[in-house]
Image (cartoon, rainbow over the protein chains, first blue to last red):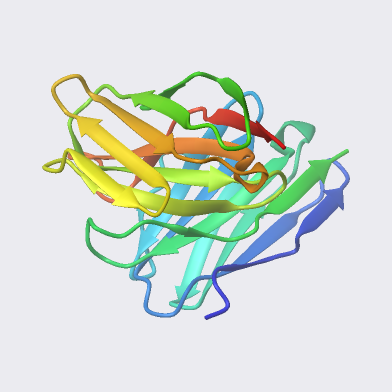
Length: 114
Length: 112
């Protein structure tokens, strides 16, 4: 199993541009999570899906952020327009149904907005 | 706000010594998990302990859970330089569905 795959690994963009981050979860995992990590705020949950349906998006900072999961093998996190304060490492994670399973994280996308 | 709070924030030891990290949390949980993060990488799941368990082992790792004190500890025995990383505890609360809430982490440095 290739694990959770995120792309791109690094993204540098100018303020105001649209940014799309991509994630492929592990096959058979029913849950998908998007986290953001910064030095100031640590790891924050942005949104999570169960069986492709968004369950909790209360962590999405504002309307500039949107996430989709069109099928069980793909999810996107979009920021439009991007701002310098969005600079962070964005992680996608997935896990199986059940309370005895941990998360498998991707390697993250390091986003820099200049 | 962060559910878990790790203590200490940073720990520096010599290779071969044991490392102990602590985590406290605030609300009732289904389980508590520990993760490791190497610099510039994603988090790796180490161990999960359920709320009805008190101790769990995995290789050189030992985790304890005291639900009455709302605290957990992670012990790494016979540490190696390769154990240098940040360690996070994360809680799955009874009322939060499947979401994990992470603490701020302990930065462990193992000197060769």
